Length: 283
Image (tube, rainbow, N blue to C red; front, side, top):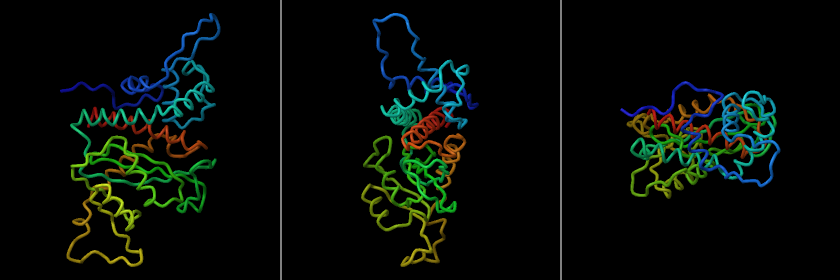
């Protein structure tokens, strides 16, 4: 039996070692300075721990105390911004998807599911809009695509007002790892994705779409009475809902306080990388 490389209990002050080993491979190399003296450079590991703490607690950057990690809040935020611009967190998610596939005998391509989750965005910013489910208040939406075990393989952020059928195309295009062309792949979604153009796009991408019919949509015929809805649409959509609940355990993803969409996406990618690690180790 393989020995676990991480624990189920989360340490909110320390990034798990397997994630750190993967993350540090994408960090910029340290420059050797010929000058002597001056303040030593802040530890990359300490900065990563502080970012991990912000992800889980939802604490503001300026609220990080220097005594907790041995690094100031301004340095943590500046380093986070730099890593995000370099695509470090996107590369980390892709690397963890490959690790998950290797440990679990491949990604479960046969049954995939997608869904979205609204989050309030009190400060507004990029990719936010009036949330139709919250009296038009500013909000954002996390769109997620998972495999048959619930592993996140694509995440996209949009404004709360953007229709799910539009975001679905971005999800399919933005899959972290290359999809096999020869395998049978089914795509499940709820009635929010009910659109003929989305079905055509999914078919062109190699999917067999199982999208629940929205009875309120005009010009749509209801399914035959002889076939039960459970037979037409297998009950596998709960897989993506479970993964979304795993994401929202992290307080920084429940409410979007970041004005820059890229910052919030980087935190979501870090959370997806952690979920992929847990699924690879614990199943």
